[in-house]
Amino acid sequence: MLYSHPKFNKSAPDQSPRQLWFVADFVRRTCLEYIAPICPAGENDPWPKFDQEKYSDALSRSQMIAGIILRKEMQFICGGPFDFGPEVRDLARFLLGTPQAEDLETLKGMPPEQVDRLRKR
Image (cartoon, rainbow, N blue to C red):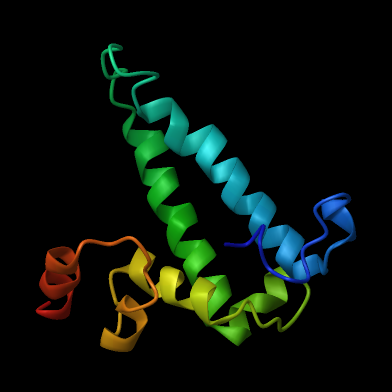
């Protein structure tokens, strides 16, 4: 979602608005350095040994990402206020486990029964 933001410059990402580039790069590095290493490499590969530190760091970084996207006062970290758009905000709320009923409609591809379960939280 961040890379498809209308202000994201795909040919020169570092030329995108500073806030958008910061968060997109933080998400990219979180996925590559903290989440991927604790996931299996392929269908037939065993799970790697659980790394509590990487797991904790991935959770902390995910909360930081969602906080920056949702809270203007946290956006000073990446250069000031920026409107990430409703789809990105919806996913950030979902990441925090606090989706609102109207946000759930934007989570394309989610099975209806899963949406219903989340609404009942």
